[in-house]
Image 1 (cartoon, rainbow over the protein chains, first blue to last red):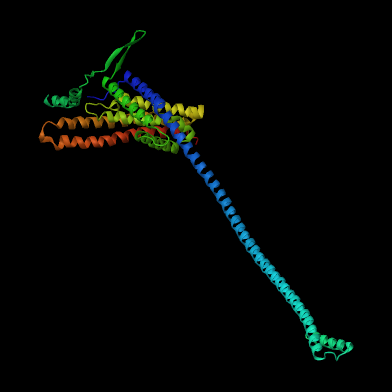
Image 2 (image 1 turned 180 degrees about the horizontal axis):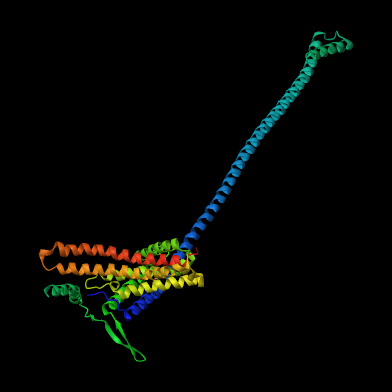
Length: 164
Length: 258
């Protein structure tokens, strides 16, 4: 065995082999794999961009929902306030009308009482008058002139009138 | 006479081992394919059969793993080989970008990765039983070194034009011979470094293999061979890496603007 530096066609063949391998690897491996790597880089970049977009959108939605919630709370508060006020008003109104009705009923009752009283007094007065006349007639039967009779009646009437 | 005879046998031992291991029936003398006639000159076309044959094996294996890698390539879940190739791509891209402008580096990316893969495979083929590393032949290492040598000039002229040759006269014109020697030393050292390592590896394997003649030589033969083969895997990878990284460095210097 000796180291041979007489170059022969093997040298050229090996250069050719190398170039052949280079071309084949470039075609079957490097180019497709580089493509894949580029696609992956693009995919990752896209995903990051999409995630950022989604995050921004989510923030926007969150802010919007928070605003909506705030508004809803305020509205609810206003509604409750309004309802409270309305019910209070209603209660007051009911009370008022009840009072008014009670007063009216009282007045009517008083009027009734007055009327009945008047009626009773009038009836009593009539009865007293006739009774008096009757009694007087019995007492002073025949001794009493018409004038005296009349005066007597008048006195009696007056007396009864004072009863009121 | 006896000493001379012994010396002769010792030299022949490797050849004998090669002959014993040549189960493929490859011609042991250069393969004569014919002559090119230039006028009255006969230029023989000869191929080192074992080198060429095992280069084909290495080519087939390189292309096979590349195909496996390409098949496993996927945007979302790459296969194992594809993932390894991607690591390799990143690794070499990083090294290229360290020594030159990434834009210029993109042009030699395929060359560099192929150098590494193919050299690694050529070196490892020598570890297969009965295998001969194509890189343990000066024909192969010089062929690869010539490619590097050409690429230095191609890339240098591509990016600097005629100005590329200015560096031969710098810093002083009388450095010209030194610079020329330096230029020639690049491919020579590349070729001989790789060749020496691979040939040495091969000779050690064959020598250790030759020691396996019986149980008496366990430690020196079988065990030694196993350890040496493990080390050889490491050496094969290192030498492929060294050749490739030096190629990157030389081209980097050639295209450098400063």
